Length: 368
Image (cartoon, rainbow, N blue to C red; front, top):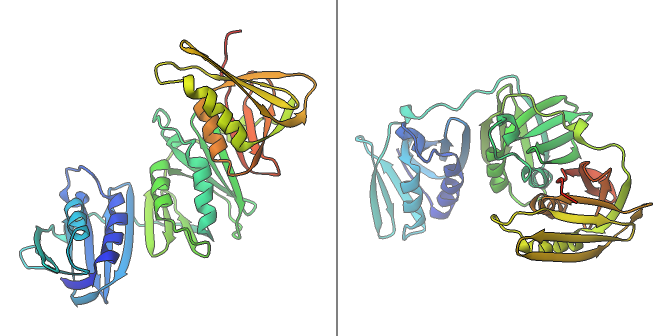
């Protein structure tokens, strides 16, 4: 194997593919990146048995072949080479020469046959959508993915398709984030994508609105194809929570409030909260204002925010400051509608003008 390519293109490809490489593994090949040259193309692949990322870049192929090189060393070497063009050659003894400018390296490679094959995905159902829309949907739901593995299926996000509508749902036992968008395809699908996979997808998705991402779902794996990258991931198994039953239908009070004003008020009173001094934020909702307060062993904070709504009487409710702040930060709208059913009922947060997203935050029981 021997090829010549632009350094910057190779660095970008290696950096992205490296995200799927095992940090530590008993199989040396899993700590490496598979390089394969064919028809003036270099294919790069990283795979950790749960997540795989593959891409192709144009190169000048002198001799076709393949080899696995340690991802950490290869990426660092290519990134710091002195020239703009890189020449890479694999010799018969698996020693790989890397030459660029005044720099010369030799790396011991691994036979490509030792690199595990990516899983084949059968019974595939596919849909497409603009990259920026999927990126926004993931950003607005991934913050609520569970970090605990007591129920592994909740460490991922539910993708549900019905009536030409894609719904993403994340839950962690204390909050819920839901986001919906229309799609062209008339499918009926339901699967759960690991949060780790979605975080890598966010990094790979470009900002260009005209780009299209193709999502292909099989029985056990999911494939995202965009911008010359293919990401394959296993799906999470298990029964996802019946999220529809957790969304309140009735309410005692609805108020509209400026998102940044409410977020800033919560941030201010939360200055007294630390990992050691934990305390909920308490709000008293009225028809034209929200009184925000917090008490910890070191002091007390009070603040007030204007709102608009209809209420016969005030309603007091307490919540975890981080959960509410996360929801408001991801609302991405100037004003939100907050729906309340009682002091111990879930807090529902939606856009003032629609229901493309729904955030649920469970309240905290406090002593009088």
